[in-house]
Amino acid sequence: MPTLNLEYYRKQAKSLLHFAQTGDAAALERIALHRGNVDPAQVKLHDAQLAIAREQGFASWPKFREFVEQSGLDDQSLVDAFIDAATSDLNRADELLAANPKIGRAGFYVSLVLGNSRQVGRAVGKSPQLATRKSGPQKCEPLVYTCFSRYANPATSKRAAGLVETARVLLRHGADPNTTIVTEDFPDSPLSCLYAATGLNNNVALGRLLLESGANPNDGESLYQSTEHPDLECMKLLLRHGASTDGNILRHMLDREDAEGVRLLVAAGANPNEVAWAVWRGRSAAVIGALLDAGADPNEPRLHLESPYAMALRNGQHDVAELLAARGADTTTTELDRYLAASDTTPPPSDVDWQGRERLLSDLAMNHRTAAVRALLAAGAPIDSRGEHGGTALHWACWKGYADLVELLLNAGASLTIEDHSFHATPAGWLDHGRRTCHEGGGDYDAVARLLGVSS
Image 1 (cartoon, rainbow, N blue to C red):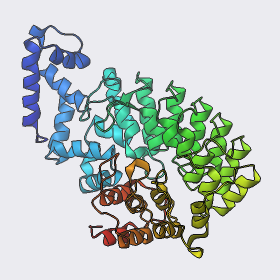
Image 2 (cartoon, rainbow, N blue to C red):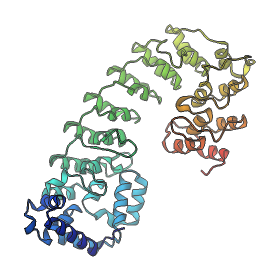
Image 3 (tube, rainbow, N blue to C red):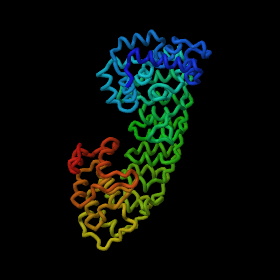
Image 4 (cartoon, rainbow, N blue to C red):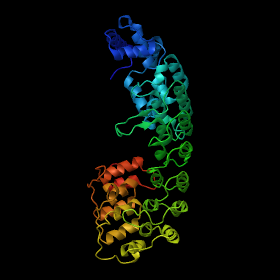
């Protein structure tokens, strides 16, 4: 790891000087950004030192040297680790900053993620190219550092306003509001700064600044991810700026309970014919009613060859079933549907044909229908039958932290080692992922971990 001392950076400057004097194009470009075009034969050490200092966010080599000598930071990797944490893990970033307060003064890229707009303004004022050039520890444009900084979330950071001003400085100096970054997880789906502002950080002011500067609201992610925020302000902002409701936007909105969000999307043009999906996701009569009021067909499209009414009935969503019946839904049901609706009050049907019904058990587990799961098992449902993503009922119960269901399924012989089809993970893997990313509430992940015999 390189140490943050003058000897390291002196060597960097000498190496840059050597390559520039031999005519290396990349080295000459680095120097030209801060000194202008120069003849390789005329490049001097102070030119290379200036380039090194400017790349670290300092106006001159003497100012950079002074910081290095006075900072007390003895490891450049610590600064890089902080910048990485600031754009991925706010708690870790806070821990690093609290333990090493002088990181806060460690140059241009730290200023970008902390929202020190004055220092950023000074740096790009002296070297305007800094505002648009891919550089720094993550080799991306400065606007990316600022918008993806977890300090930009107003709900969790007091630095959010400073990051808006930092973005304003960068945009004023030529930064592209449609700048994107490609990640290892999604190499074919670049993520935009607008997505970071709205979908990731729920920062309305930052999103508005980008949109007013020309950001494209139809970047494939921003509106979709904005549906996850309870206040819906970023979603409303994107809709006002022309974000399209095509695709799976409404379905994603239906992944959680929010009747207002549903009404906003259908009013903006989303196709309301998602009644079956809403029932499958366990949504309330208020949400189903919002779809029906917008013109949705209570019978179509069917999901997994099942009618919305039948799904609601066996899910125990009796108020939804009554609403659908009142609005003209097909009320045809099977013996198994009626049995599940009655749960434990009637004897299970005999000789159930499970072909075509394989996903029932996992669907009921996903919606925390414990009584119906118990009834289905009593009727002979295969314990490890698969549903969405090829996950079993135990996978889904683990992902949502439903301890009562996990205990029921384990007692019934559910496999702990079976892997789903989409992610090739065991139920314990879904537990770990659900603990970190499932925000539907009500789960007791510690209790599930104890039942599975894994670390919590």
